[in-house]
Image: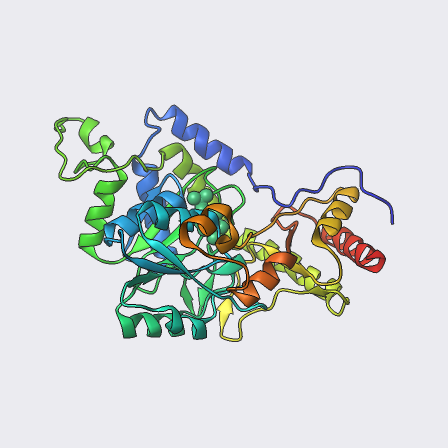
Length: 383
Ligand SMILES: *Cc1c(COP(=O)(O)O)cnc(C)c1O
C-alpha cells in the first residue's frame, strides 16, 4: 500500500471557532481566572452526571490529591487500584503516605476485575479507585457491593469517562466522588483541567478549601464590588483552581461532547469491523452489562509479534500511537517503595506487554481508520 505523506497523530483535540470565540470573549471580559465561567462549567457537569456538586480543578491529578486527603487517607492506609492506570493515581496515593494495593484487570476490557477485589482487602484498606478504562464503565454494582461490605470509600477515576454511562447512570453519578480529566488527549479538553463530582456538603466544603489555599471564599467573591477583601484560613490548602479562560473552552467542548463522542464511536466501529478476525491481534472487548462507551481510546493487543517492532513499523507508515498504560506495579519507584514485582498480576502483565493505542479522535476521517487498519494487517502479515 501507498504510505501517506502527512503524519497521522494518535490524538488531536477538536477545537472549532466556537471554542476560540468563547476564550477570546473571556479574555476581553476583564475576568480570566476562577469565576462565573467555572461556575457554569461546574453546573453543566452536575447536569451531565446527575451529581449534586462539581468542583473544577487544574487537573484530575489535583482532584485525586485533595480527595484522598479530604477523606483522610494517610500513612498506614491501603488504597485498592488497578495497576493498569496512569501513574498519577499511584503518585497521589504515595504522596499521601499510603500504600497502593493492585488488583488485576480483565484481559478483554482492561477494567478492574470485581472478583479480585475482596481478596486484597485488609483491615488497613480504606478506598478503592476503579478506572473506566478507555471509556468502558467498570462494573460499579459489584465494586460498590464489595466496598459497602467492608466500608471502603469509592473514588471513580473517570478521566476517560466523559460520556460514559453504566446501566443508565453517567460516571460520577453514583453518589460517591469521581474525578474527570480535561487534558488535551481526553474526550473534552480545557488544555489542562479536571473536575470532581460528588455529593455531600461537608466533603464539598473541605475540598473547596483545599482547592484554594484553605481560604473560605474564592478570589472573585473577594474582589467584587462591595466585597470584603479580608480572608482567614481554617487549614492549609493547595492552589488547584481552574481558570475562567479554560472553563470557557470546556463549556463549549462539553456542549459538543455528544457530537464528538458520536464520531469516536463511529470510527471505533470501523476499527472493529475491519480488524475483526485478523489473527495475532486481540480487539478491545466491551462489558456485558448495559452501558454507553465513551470510546476515549482504541487499545489493541498485539499477540503475534513484538510490540516494539510493531510500533516501529507503524512509524514507517506515518501513524502515531500511544501506550495506555505501562503496568504501574512494575514502575521503578513503585517496585522499590512497595516491593511489587513481575508475576503478581497475570492479566495486567499479559495485557501491558501487548497493548497499543491506535489513532482515535473526532476530527479523524473514516479513510484514516481504513488506512490504519490496512497498515496493521500488512504489518501483522509480515510479522
Ligand atoms: C489522564 C489520566 C489521569 C490524570 O489526568 P490529569 O488531568 O492529567 O491530571 C488520571 N487517570 C487516568 C486513568 C488518566 O488517563
